[in-house]
Image (cartoon, rainbow, N blue to C red; front, side, top):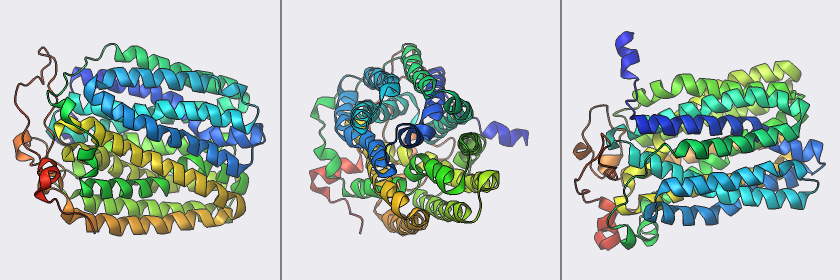
Length: 451
């Protein structure tokens, strides 16, 4: 047992741990606010559910534009600066949300928040990728999922009580956590930028047809799983199953606690295994749990419904753990070093696209046929599972499996070499990055596309 627990050590550097601490604070604020956004708009401000779902989707619509810009500037001026700007923008937008009285105001503020959110994810992922050894990247992002879900778990519990007391306090507290993360980032070094960064463009990304297929696959998965769980399960549970605000907070806490406990063991479990098979298994876990949520809301109510949904959430969270070890690390492994920020911008855009389609379409389904929403989402997850299995053969050979602990960078063909860090950092290196299969494809080498 002691040996197994030692094997779960993610082996992070001091700088990565500092970054994780800031992420924890920020996630605590998100856990307070996100479960109650649609409830606030609908139940407190009288905005119809369909319109409230469109408001939630607005964040991702505006995140599209800023993600492209953030990817470029993360490669050119550094991801830390981009991340700090994004956090300040989100702090302003969230802090003004208590002033919302009508739908147009909610659209305007969540659009502003979307500009920050769209920049946040590619910048943070690029910074983490630069600070992490390539062979430990999956463990670094698994640890990030742990810290963020720990923050969300604590925030969900606090948010349920804050929402019952004061939505103004809820939004102001969330805004303060964004600024706290800005302060933490001043203690994190800025990685040196790749010497060929000026030559990279988004054409390098778009030409990688395998990666573009993977991006669309992830968008489908997010639209029919996490986006619905975050934005639409709370109003479904409250309005169809009479679950209280405190009960909804418990659901978020259970999800996050499971991820905190299981994420690192799952990251260890998938080492050396095929990523797309694990991705397909994740889709099956999402499908089963979505059906369970719908059935629970139909047959039960109150704290009985909350308890059953909490139990089903354990299965859903297991799927999230698989996603946390696969999505961003695989994206970084497929990316040529000079455009890693742009690849991670597209990875973020897949989330944004999912968050547009899921709440926007799902909000109207929830309004007119609430018990059809979760079976429909479960069916889409089965489609995604088949898509993932078909995509595996198109991945670069060195990226098909999650690296094992102790694998050398050179032993993982096609992975992104670390961006050089400051010379006093223990990960500093002067080695030139190895050639990447995507460079060959961009030059006409003919990377195979997914069917």
